Structures are given as C-alpha cells and as structure tokens.
Length: 482
Image 1: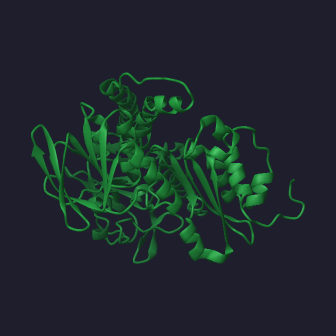
Image 2: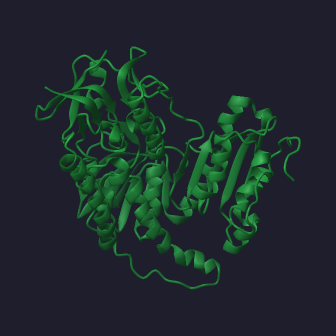
Image 3: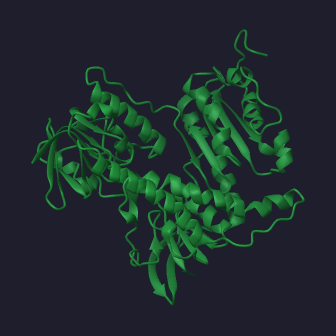
C-alpha cells in the first residue's frame, strides 16, 4: 500500500487543494470522472454550471425577437445549429478538462492520479486513512479530503435506463435537438433546461409532482415564475412519471395525476431533473463509521472536519456537494480555501462561512436569491417584526425602457433594526441585481444604510435594487446619509 502525505477524492474543487505547499510532499488524487464522459475537473466544469450557461447565452439570443417586438423592432431567429453549438461548447470544456488531467497526471512528479471509483477502507478513527480502487490500487495518507461530489437522482420506474432518457450529465451532448422534450422536475435544473430548449424551438413539456415550479424559493417568486413558465412552454402539475417505454422512434411516458388518472406523452427524449444526491454511498462512508445525514450528506463541523460518532476526526476533511447542503460551486470553492488553510496550518484552523449564501437560476426569466424566505423570516423573528417590499422592474426608468412587466425584486428585513433577512429576484440580470444585497448582508449593513450610503447610477437597472431597499419600513440610523 503506497503511503502519501495527502489524499484527495474528487477533482472538482478538491483539485485546488494541491498548492505549492505540497511540492515536496506526496499527494494522491482519485476521481473516476463526472457524468457520462468520465471527465476530469468535477461537475461544474463538465456537466454543470459552466456548460449549461454556455447554452443559456445563445438561448437568450434566440429569444431576442420576443423582446424586440415589444420595443417596435422586428427581428427573426432563423436557425439554431445545435450540433455546432454543442461542439463549440464541449470543444472548449473537454480541452480544459483534458489539460487539467494532463497537468496532474504527467507534469507533477509528486502527484499520483487514480482515475477509478475508490472506496474507503480500514480504520477511520485516526490517521492514516486508506482507500482501494476498483482495480485494487490501495493508498493511505496522513490527511484525507473527501470532495466526491454528487450525482443526479433517478426515480425507480420501468424504462428509466432507455437510451432516450437523459439527466443533466448527458442531455447537453445529444446528437440532435429533440423536437419534443419531456422534462420531469420543477427545480432549478429542470427549469434551466426548459428555458434553454424552448428558446431553441423544442416543444417542451414540463411535469412536476407539486403545484408550482421552484417551490423551494420564496412563494412570491415561485408563483411569478410559474406564471411566466406557463406562457413559454407547457407545464403540467401534480403528475408523477410511472413508466417510460419505446414508442416508434421516440418514447411514451406514462404519467399518473394526483387524483389517479393515467395520461401519456409521446416525445423524442426525456430529461429527468428531480434533484441530486451526495456520493457518500459510492465511497462507503457509512461502512467505515463516518457520520452521514439522512439526506446522504457527509457530516462535518464548522472547520469542514468529518465527524464520526459526533466527533471530528483529526486530518479528515470534506467539502462541496458530498457534505454541503447548498450544493453550489461558489460554496465548494470557499470550503476548499478553508480546507486548504486547515491542512497547511493545523495549529490555527479556520471555520467556513455559510451566511448569506446566494444562488441563481438561469431560466427564462432568470431568478436569484439570498437569505431566507418570508415564511422562514416570520418563523425566525415573528411576522409582526417583518417588513417587505416588492419592487417591479417596470416602475423604474430602465424598466420603462425595457417595457418590462414581469420582473420583480423582493427584499425582506427586520423592521426593528433594518437587518436584511433575504432577497428574491425574478427578471433580467437577477443574478447581478442581487449582489449589493449579498454584500450588505455579508458586511452587516442595515437596509437604509445600504440604500443611502452609496450613489446608484441613474437610470441604470440597478435602481430596482435601490428602490426595493428604500421601500422597506425600517429605522433611519442617527446621522445616516441623506
């Protein structure tokens, strides 16, 4: 069994842990790859954030004629070259992935790469920590970081393994754009792909078990987005897929409604997007005595140390989707910076930050959120202590220029102190408009100071954010800016 100073499972954010500190030490990095291509670099690079946004951008351009028509300009999208788009996207992604693997495998003498699924083995109460690969490669290390990521959840229904059934791992690499696509799920992955494919001319049918889309978001945003989605593609609620079968050259999906009726949809392809699950089971975390939450996440403390029987194990860390409730790349990167510091400075370890975590959903329209929803805020500080404001894009000067009748920006605060508790946005550039709120929450600024303590360019769209803050009923601090 080879012995190392550091062992890492996962080549996403875990890959960034190999800093110059380790140049004179031995490191082993294990990763079987992400998605159907077994690529190096993790979910975000290969099958997640980056390639999806590379499809979102041309999708927005394809929808250009709709916005132009509102503004008395006639445009036309004449063609969407799916195969050229796909090859352009993955020509770039695959080259980056291959280059990262080449660098770790060939150019760094002190790093060994294991490109197989590995399983934890042996005693995990104290160092050294060991794993064994599918082909029998065994390694142990004084410190181990588990950054094994997550994978799409698949329902256990007949036909789920048919060639035309896809997850986010494979849908972006299909040979031809489907004329008719059924999407199962109502969360961010399902809604992003619904926005992309409908923009490209595919007939999209989205089915969801619950009533409404994006129901994990604030209720006002969920309702507003559901209404917009229903205008742009077909949405069916309270339906569960129970069977998928080959039908002609496509697929027939059996759906059961909440009242027991059976329906069928004949489509060219199916996208299953009902969530993701941590890969703790694939590495055998429970079997070696590590603590695992009921949702499959590896349990860690505030320093990202893995827990066993409720206690942190020295030298054993985890980060990213395998342990993070947020399952967001920017959170994984922050956790990786913390873990890198703690590995290199064990006498002065630091905690991760998990406050004011933002997220964005790049559907049509775009959405973004930070903090808690109005319902959660009422439970936290009491409904009587809340103040909220929904600012419509169309009530600002730039909103007039856009003729925007849908965009909304909601902010929630404690009326006693002005503390911002959450913000929720749906509309053009939502992921950018929310950033001043993220900054204010991160640095403890009250709502009034955040609004009046800086200039806001007039008539930029960012005035939506400003006016949302000014619409809150909060105390004005003494000597506050005018």
